[in-house]
Image 1 (tube, each protein chain N blue to C red):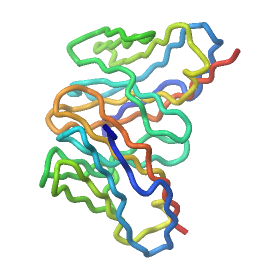
Image 2: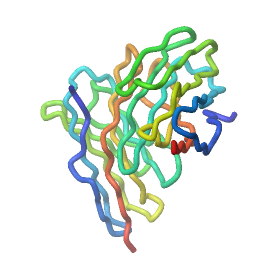
Image 3: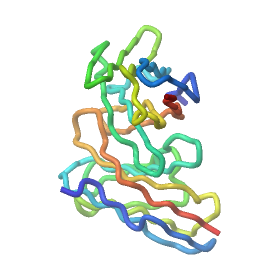
Length: 112
Length: 112
């Protein structure tokens, strides 16, 4: 049981490049979310999903796209990377009831 | 907008003492309040949650207290150990969409 798996762990992008951060969970969780965490800060919600085919924006959605074609996968796409998107990105998943989300180990992204 | 926030950015605790981490919240509609622990370079790890209709919940060495009158949440760690050194986040969750909103975090440093 792998939990929440994020790939890659590290990535360096040039300004203007696009890329997809991958997230997969094997717990059959309905809810999945993407967060970004800047140094010394809390986690800010980018996008979230309550099930396959259903997504919505969080606090900081600009510059990011998501889709949820399966229960297991929730990729995050950076359309045109900017230095302001340098951050650590966390994917998380949860059942519909209960409080806790399970988090992945993160992707550290640097945009130069 | 409404948010979750923390009173103290850093808490220094002597090994063996009890720790108390505080959190203020402003959204009365939250269904769950959750505490996470984040060690350096890792994703947040679920510690304990409490439903909004409860005022106290205990786990192993941890107790969460919820005071809805003053919109205050606290995490008590008994007999703090060096392994408890980490950043602790409170978060609140709305059931219908499962949105999880985090506070800024408190750094707990355990001294020998």
